[in-house]
Length: 528
Image (cartoon, rainbow, N blue to C red; front, side, top):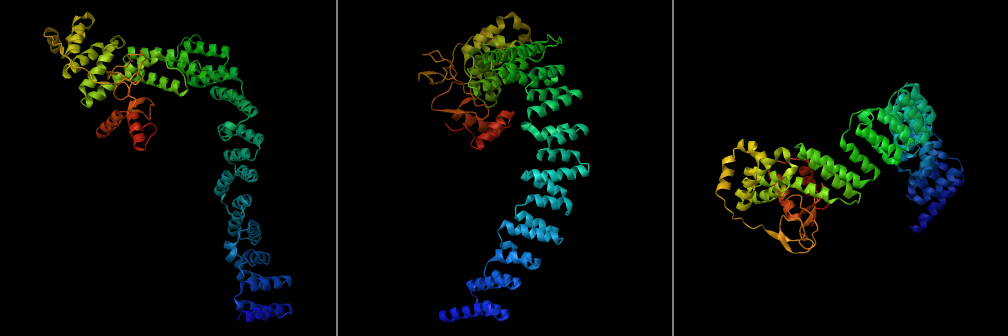
């Protein structure tokens, strides 16, 4: 059989060379030998018998050679059947050109796409297929300057100036794009397309344009991008309070004493007689890298908010300041941290009380009561809460101490008389009970000595101890984690209890909700 197959193959080849093409092609087809088909196809190709050669190349799995012949012979029906098996971009490009010449534009676009010739696809979408949106998308994805140039011309022809500006910039024709932006009031698009890549020269031209249009804030921003900080700051200050954030950013970049003093004068109200929000001064010091002054300013702002009874705002200012300083690797002053501890303890009181932890509530209220002068607007209310919670949790001596303080202070008399707890507090003073249960202890994270759970000072080194943000107790080395939202330390066991308790009830603040969501996703810091 093998010998007969070899003989028949030789007969087929010789038959073709002798000119009996029909018989030779038939013998090759009947042989079912792919190698023979390829050999016979090559003979036919040399004899310029193109279609017979292509059919045998196809049977012999040489689809590229078959496709090339079909395309050159413009036999699109045969070519289309095998183009899916062709991988050479060159052949797809040839097929695309042939289809385009024959008016088969959809097939041509598909072929050009397979040939990775996206510029040709864009050209067909714009000129023949009426698919401009597709062309826009393809150019944005490919970033081709040639394609962008074609799309820009199309947009200009159809009065789509915003589109023309975008694609002119992609085609590196910025001068034409700028001229269009000026004449058709599309400068916002021009600058948004350039983004952070805008050159100093382009930024200067944009700034000048905005200045002539009296858009001083935008002009100042682009002057800052080209390094003209002095001019930028003057324009920002002319805008009043609306551009203070950008003014701070410019001064932070410039690090120029003259500009710094100019902005400070403005913030203090020396230029217009209207002092601005102190928070701007705090942010200015941060931008300048003057962290000690930023810390002092944060304390001043929080102190004012606290005096006004805005404890939530004061707490937010301090929490934000601590986070900012720690994220930049800066020292957090003891004054700032101590103030935060007192305010955070006050914030925790309601949460602990709602969970029925009366002793924890009483201990934190005692900490707050020790700084009652910082809460002038609600001093009596806080002290009464301290007395009641101490009484409930068995801290009789502490309840008697603060009840005596309230009753003996003339400044508290009117508020005490208006309180429904007046009689109860007076009774605590008249019939003193000085029994008091001892506070639970836990090991100090510095020295390891057992100390009261809410004590925040190491008895050995006198160092301040880190506080758990969900209980107000000092931290313990073997039960340590970080809140994934505030990045502050928490006792792991207590933090899990806190999240579970909040999940069972109503979550009362955004931070708690965020912490719960992060914890469920295995957030950073939740592991011990």
